[in-house]
Length: 162
Image (tube, rainbow, N blue to C red; front, side, top):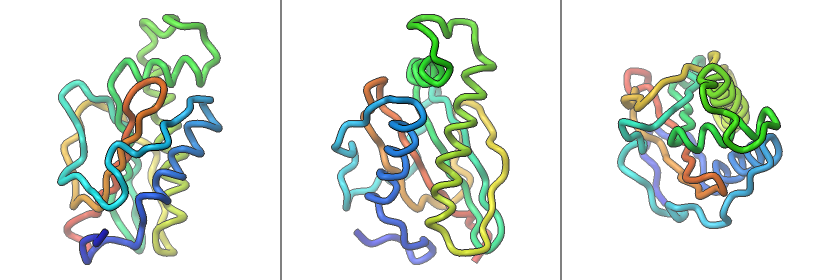
């Protein structure tokens, strides 16, 4: 797989390992061994549908961009339920908790991705919303089939920074 010239040298398998470690360790949700976009194949843009929830951290310093964690609302509810140790169906009406859980997942995934970036990079607190418009040049998107449904991570580089 050849990444764009502006991309840091990050392999899909390292992103998959990072997300797998966070999701399986923190939330106890298994990931399918098969990345829905197999190694060597990339999407042309982050996968964000109008109903998709996202949480993203912004990287700044020697490398600038975003790390986005995205999923459908039902997957976010399942992640939250597991994160908080609640029974099935108990996340109805818990929008703040879903936002906090998604933010924590983005923060942890972003912190782990940061270790794959050049030295001198830090990240912001997470932002949360629906259907985030891409804010940079796509470096890579890796999509995973977890037991709660599809979950993906996208890494975007700020196009205005060399």
